[in-house]
Length: 263
Length: 212
Image (tube, rainbow over all chains, first blue to last red):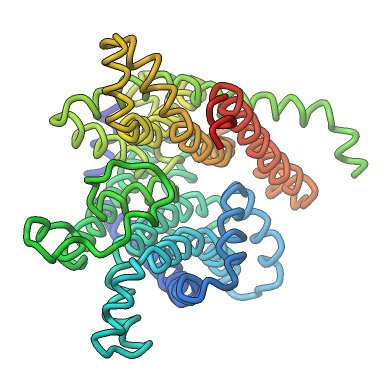
């Protein structure tokens, strides 16, 4: 079986044209990228608002309760409902992107909300005491402090979107899922397994990339790299965490925990 | 609604299959995660490997994992073992970390008190540490249960019968009622799992109710 997959993957005809691997990867990335971008534009401002003001918390619970809905069901329901209403070639793309957004908003929203809400009030007060105004406190203190949780929310949204974009091939969306669904329909195991390997690699690669971003984008004052310097203790409140963890866990560890809880 | 009434027997059968495909891996995953989570906590060198490794498992999209299972297990593509093993891996991915965190959250003073009372090794683990970790583990189990119920429905694309069948069939036949049955069925099943786990955790942690 491995030989057949090797043959399929190295066959030059599978690397060119509209059904070629580079084209399918590009499609997968474009659909996922657009959906994630729109989701972030919705979820991050909303999460900051809710976390900052403590109002409209129901939006977070509503978004979270959406997670019990099976993504496959959501996909088929939206496709069946919207598909006939869209005449152009976008009839398959728009329903898929809508579902991807619906699935990506909850993790980003709750990550942002939890991050902003968990900022140590003392850090906020200190910023005000240093003369920062509302907007400055948000930009220079609250958002940087919330960044680990925001990024881990984004990370689990990315995984969710890559996985669901694969399934969306069953409602005729392009992308790497095509190989899995087309291979299934003609019982071509080499094709579907190759597609599965490619999609798994893509997911692992993107996850690794975001992990790298997490490592570099997070302020050293938060990541615990300055742990031993007096006066540079992490500023995210330890009382804000929802679940139990050891007291020595750094905020990045905690971000990972949040990620687990999010998926 | 009459369609639902006419097909109630089928719906229940599919729901039963769904319960097995999501539930058995949940139990097996938990039983495997307990020693692994304990090992991650006990041996610092293993911690990184176990936590990162199980995290990577969760990264792999479900449809891809279902399709790759025959390659790893040597099974046929429609062997239900594929779904059981894949779902166990997903459960494990979520629970190893939860168990490690839960055991780590046991206060040091409690541990010392237990040692002073003569608890040693495995006995302390089973009688003191593990029971105290139950609330954290149960919370992780609830996340895993809801996630499992949703992921199992994807297996209908490969052809495994469970509630996801109504989703694929309803879409192919342009029959919204069937899709609604599939979605509502999955949500209800997820709620059922959630309730059972919460009730179970409530029953086995009587001290949580007294202490407040």
